[in-house]
Length: 346
Image: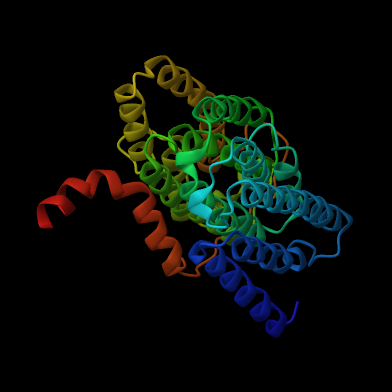
């Protein structure tokens, strides 16, 4: 793809995201989401491989259906209340339809089927955009309408997402699919708390974006998409592979790494809301995710493949690690340990 086309698509992505997150009117929010969808499609299909074309088609159909549902929800609300303001979503049917539309946009259970397939068919850099930037506008709409949504429905969807994200990721060998199921599980954590403390959802989303961006950029640097090739990449960039171990454990939410912050705060908030059984359930379900993160971490740091067949070792690269990866890796692992120090400085 030529640089001019890439620039146009990148600008459109920024424009679409900015329109949606800054709008108060449903039609403007819908227009921003449509611009986003149309900008990412060529980036998914850029390799012209049948798998990439299939991924782009699936993405287009799902997002078009979600946008239509969102428009229908806002029109129903406007019909009954005379309000087009995003924050004034009060009609129960509209709230229900909007929950379905946003769940479809984000890839929450039971509308998650498209996400692993689309991520598997996309290049790693596009996968990064799909997992982070493309989730930001729907997450903003979720945040703005959180006071109107049904808490019981969201809790059920969140528990299902955490369970399915963990279970389905257990037997995967493709790293992009593992990261897709990891994303679904993380969305479960964000959804469970949104009606009680929306700011916590945003904090979780920002930290998830940081950690996922680091993981995708690292995998893109060492050019790895499968567990079998991940085992032999330690010779290529040993320091980067060692850092990948910490990033994956941070994504799993192990203390004292950054990923533990949102889990800790969400469990605390759920307990305050007298939802201790729900907090216990989602905490136990996160152990499923921990298993496949540990599996990935083991493959990333293993120095000998665990079988006797001859493996082609990769050449050690003397290229310095990208500065952005270094900064992101530091933040996505050390934010919790250094936060007391930041608090004392402030």
